[in-house]
Length: 151
Image (cartoon, rainbow, N blue to C red; front, side, top):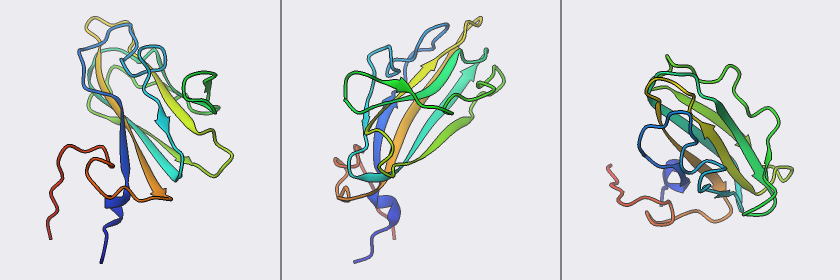
């Protein structure tokens, strides 16, 4: 039976849709009820931050990693965008591609803080985990509510 390679990807939502942020961390970021991505059994990861409307440069955008799920997170060298997403980056995506080759830590978080503008910024973020030891075979295992397969 043929399986589309896209059906083997697990999605982990990091920053869910939420109210506009101005000079504040997005909920799901490292210091604000952090969402942790467990990469056990996967060899590739893509983390996407998607901006909506924004009027100011982000104050922070980088990745953190750890060997433990709840503590000892440190900034990943080279993960800070330079320049940071700006006030003219409405509706743009900022993407990290990570090779999980055994030298990387197991747990990952994002640190995303909106700048101090007149209104603020909207953003969402998620991780896609690929090439897993065990293929997620259901919508639930892929973290989707509903899936439709078309020929």
